[in-house]
Length: 281
Ligand SMILES: [Ca+2]
Ligand SMILES: [Ca+2]
Image (cartoon, rainbow, N blue to C red; front, side, top):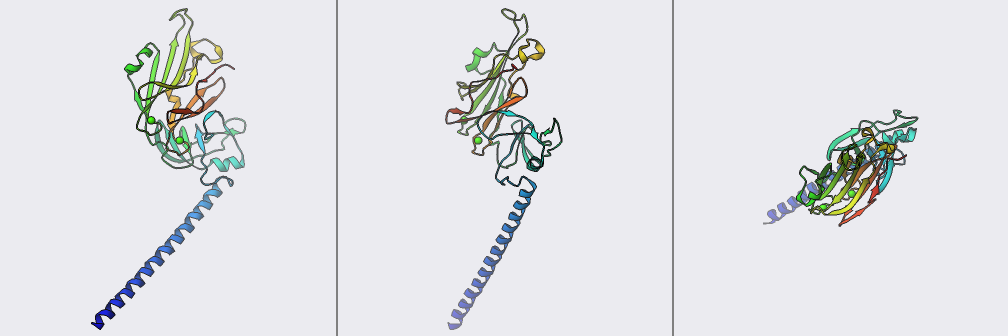
């Protein structure tokens, strides 16, 4: 009886020792792991801009940095310099055609225009922060829905279907064009206009996003100067990591391009709506 008790006690003590050793090993590993990660962070910080926090995200459109905020902004090449070279020569996570395209090492600093450059070796949209920026993919609709039959006389109507805010209901992005050649219709004046509209799941208009009424570059009414808005210039991507996909629209101007970032949330559109694009100087 006494022996059994003693045995149990020994057994308990041995178990305790094993437990202490395991906990010790775990703590040792955790400490060392933290050490390596913080060392990596230091290395990363060194290789990018010193002022840049590891959590800060850089958003590129065609290799040019755009602000992560709602509204219209100009896009242009970045000035070459020691700081910007350090900042932009880093790893990017790439997106194009509504899909994640993997990571790449961006290169910046090769002059393209009087001391200005873009980041190369990246896709259409690139970010330095890694997360699921395309939580839902868009679908193209090829046939005009019966709810939109009154648009059947437009030159073209293209539709993308996507659940922007993730509430289970799909929104619709529609781009129409009116493209008449000289002498084709009415008074014979050529026509080039287009627009991008956000519709709800029942194809009811939520807002006009962008309209290009006079799509003739510099008001020169020839075929070769016609410019149209297009869904090829519209992307859906969550740029601020809140699981709501922003709409990014590339807008043509007389010189260069503008970008509009719009957010659809709880039935409302935030950012610029009813934007009238212009190709006049
Ligand atoms: Ca939705
Ligand atoms: Ca978002």
